[in-house]
Image (tube, rainbow, N blue to C red):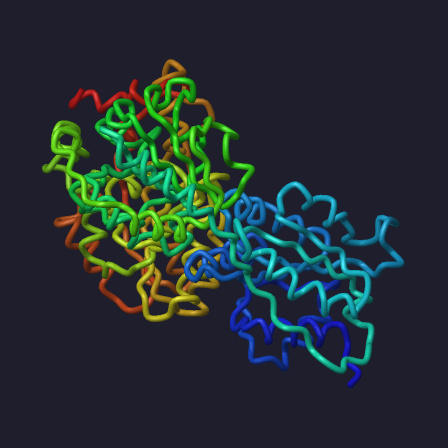
Length: 557
């Protein structure tokens, strides 16, 4: 059977189980789009290639399986770069397929030619430049296997137009690619971890995104309960532990609660699983957990010892290690340490003035109370992101999607679209800011076209809030280029895209009731939520400071 490269590529995607993909057509990838016209794969036309990349991320983060985005050559491919780099830092399985000029034109500065292969080397797990239609039969399954195996990540497949147009005989199809299991840790290593953890007087469970990406939650919850083991999460680890669990201390680090950071400073043993000890979590690294023995579990050997020396290192899948460890642990009560954790939670709660319904913490709590527990929450990057991390009671993994490592403004809306496509029947909430939403506001058209149940709440303070906050606290109140003057009427803008919208401010009679009403519909909606421009995110660790130097809101210091 003689088939074109485009039909081969389409068929391989179908055999991988891809049912929805996002992208944008252009000259170099038109043969693939022509082939997709006859496919059962649904195509989501993003309004910008970066939006397509984040839509695919939303799918992958919701399911744990590699998702696909498409772009043409040149500017199409370069527009994908931020989403690809974001996936690399947050360990998201992504297969980005880009068109390329015909091979005879590569290196001639042809129209819409860039070196996509070279550009993506430092931001991908692997990349390919396909040289023939037959190569597709090997490359596509391998791309999915690489994206999903070990520490997940993005793979780029750059396909010249002549490869898509060429015809070859295909007599058989390769087995679809899938993630390969990680070799398990030795029993002796698990035994030693169990021994050290059981012997510790003041242990803390330190959970990162690697644990959220696996099935580790049940075992880690069991371990915490059985061992009187307080737990903390990085931003990417939220949801692994139930936020309401008595010994769960929430997020650590720059905007973690002061009690959480104090407890870590007093710990004598840190069991870190699926975490990379990044600077936003640890603060000044030399003073992070100075008295603690560090046991570090990670699927990626390069993360062990990269930032923080590990006294005990285990290379393996977080779910496997957690399950085997939990089966070895006997019940141990640590009444003094348990009481200390509970005391710090009482001493340093997350404050929100009861008489300010539009204080961001009160709003986040109201949002959580209005949505089912399995709703998928996406955020952009800024103050609103930290308020969500502090106040939203995540109780399951994969219910928070946020740009952690790269910190990409514009992530939230397209990611929410992708999550809604991947998890039909579940509600979606995108929390954004008036700065972030404009980064990919064009995807409101995509949201309207698909009529997805995504509620977008824009925290509007007429500023780049985190920038303004740092300028206020550390730059003498010199507000350079952080004021967002001439902002659009976001409610009117949403309605122009065909999405119901409203504005809520201090003059609204019952703002939280109005918010609940806006969230009650079945389809999409946008809420322009006016908050005070000087409301800051507290607690906060100053840049360069140690976590135990957390500053609290002046009124509660």
